[in-house]
Image (tube, rainbow, N blue to C red; front, side, top):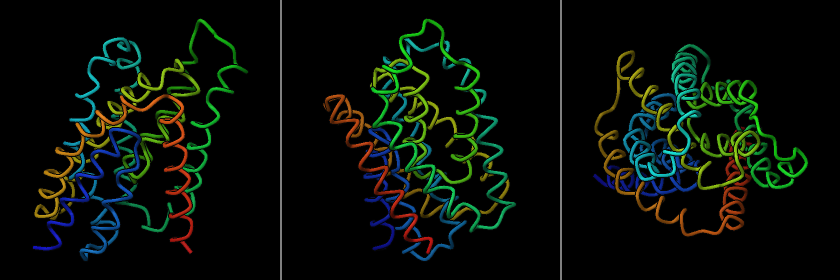
Length: 247
């Protein structure tokens, strides 16, 4: 019983962090391991349990998404395909395959978010967006998210900061939608292809649904500079944690 309560509380925190920044899985994944689940089972349980909270986070940003219909039409199908590919890789590759690549990606993405204003100035204001490199980058992030969802949001924010408008709230809205798409598709794939511990899934679902609106409320009240700083700090801490735990 204590483990279920702990998992639910971790779900609340993860739902809030995922909606505000990303990387909420780095709260729930270790807790699931502490509860006694094997790594791959914990990863699958985590993805399924946080999927409803991801949808709630996207819904909380629905007004910001109305101005990004073209991006949604282009990037959602790419995210669906990437999520299926990533989830398939999780079930076919060794569980240690991502121990080095994942923290490097997270740290690089956090730095991209921090350097975004400088990169926008160096690039200049272009009338046409780079849809091809944006689509390829989102495809890679979606494969990663289907494989291991931790810090997917930070990676998406880093990508969107390069290729999209410099409005962080608009980026966060699109990040939440794409993150939700990947999580839901991967969760559905796992439900159809492998066994799932539904007791812990229900605890995570309950907690993440409560935490997602809290994260949206918090993110909207942070200044752009402070929000960017929070993303960078969390990303660097998560990346460092994963590098140290891989040793």
